[in-house]
Every structure is written in structure tokens, then in C-alpha cells.
Length: 196
Image (spheres, rainbow, N blue to C red):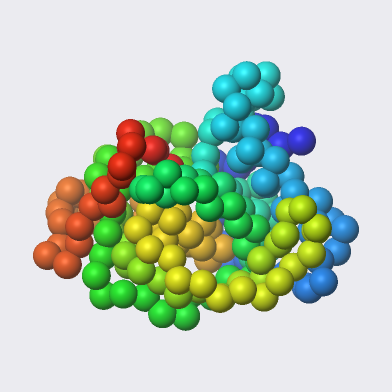
């Protein structure tokens, strides 16, 4: 079982390395890894389990964050309309993106960045993605293409960056961390803002 100590932090140079494609069908090792990543996020939604197992809650986690350089990540997140998105993502590609940008008004956070970072991260508001989707119930993969927007598009891009050795802090404008381009608008939540 993964816990917060299993997650490597920003001073570990492995976080800056590029990940390799994952072979399909998944090996037992890769299946166990994606299940472990999923379990970490699910347990983070339960306050008692999070405390018991030393879990810092999150809405996404990528294999490189547990020092496995493979192109896979898991998302378990509620969007700005309080709808649950639960994805096991393998070998993703962003095939198109909007010129219009969006951002989280309180900034982004990361399980691998154990400090507060001030500044905004502007990302495409809408993306079209292709990936091998892991079905957690049947433990099979299905090739998937979907369009994501708003908060879930932000979460997907944040995790996608990990596969290429990038962190959200790389996207913050160093001279003016709170600069908002004219083509960018914040994600508006219908409920209390959730920190990634």
C-alpha cells in the first residue's frame, strides 16, 4: 500500500526524467501499480483512512511520483459541477487543445511539492486526449478518446506533465506570478474550491 512517504519530492532528480511507454496488455506489475495509485487517491477521500495510513489527499497521482518512470497516472476528482471523474490513464496523448486558457484561482498544488507555491498556472481550457483507459472493475484496458474541459482538463494536464519530467512550478511566470493573460479565465466551482 502506498502512503505519503512513497511519493518522491521535488528534490529527487528522477521527477525530471521522461517516462517510457507502457506495454499493453499490462503486466501484473503494471496492473498492481495502477491499482495502488488508485487506492492511494480513494483512501485520501476518507479522513480516517488518510490519517491511519499517512496519506496526503490528492486528485491525481502519476507513476513517476512513486519513482516508476512509466506513462501512467490515475485521476479521482470531482469537477466544478460536483461530478466524479475516475480514470486510469496509460500512454496518453493530448491530440488537440484550445487557445483559450484557464487556471485555478488559488494556484495548483502537487503531492511531490511539499511546500506552498504562490502563482498561477495557465493551461488550455479544453483538450482532446487519447489513452488506454484502465477499467478498475474488470482490470482491462480500453483505448479511449475524450474531450475534457475546465478543472478536469487542468488535472489531466498536471498529471500528463509528470510523464515528461515537468512540474506545475515550471509554468508559473517568474517575473509576475499572478499575471493573467487576456485569453485566460479561472475555473468556477459550484461548491467550495478544491485544492489539487
